[in-house]
Amino acid sequence: MFQHLFAEMNKMLQEIAEDFPTAEGARRNDLLCKYNMLHRLSDEVMDEWLVFAEKLSDFRQNADFSPPSEEEMPQIEAPELAMDSFVRGQGYYKLLMYRKCIEQFKQVITRYPDSLAARLYLAMAYLQEGELDVSWGHLHHMLALIREKKLKAMIYNALGCIRASQGRYPEAQELFSLSLQHDPLLPEPSVNLEVCRRRGGKLQFGHQLVSLL
Image (cartoon, rainbow, N blue to C red):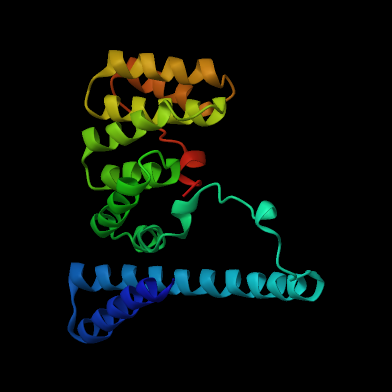
């Protein structure tokens, strides 16, 4: 499951090791950024693995491993999460390799077109690549699938940010207003409405939405 992620991390580390001794200027800074990212990911993986290993051990000691009957077999709510393409796509996203991330999640939605998680990864990856209209399409697709008001509010806010980035402020204002209708306590739409009013400023995409990835 994780082989692809570690293969890419090793490939990136090899590039750093080969080029860093002679790198200068912007290239050296780029390699340092990649090294810091790999170091951070390595620490996160180790921390998460230690927590997981402890929980796995606790479960193994207390669980009943007798096989259930067919009637008791649970149904997987989001089977796409087990796809290799999904796991690889997540890894590419963490490595900021958005184009490869897109390739993987396009395979996921071919099989599971209504996967909210896959659509969100695609929307964010396309956004990072500057393909705003494609990102819009995936976010808009999600709206029809979402029932939870807070999440719908975050999607409307993200759509508003895309339109505001394109200078389409009246449309953006409508979307930010819809966001507030679904969740009046969400702070970003109010800030973004002020950006639209001034026709300039920093848009607040919403850290809560990004944190879902």
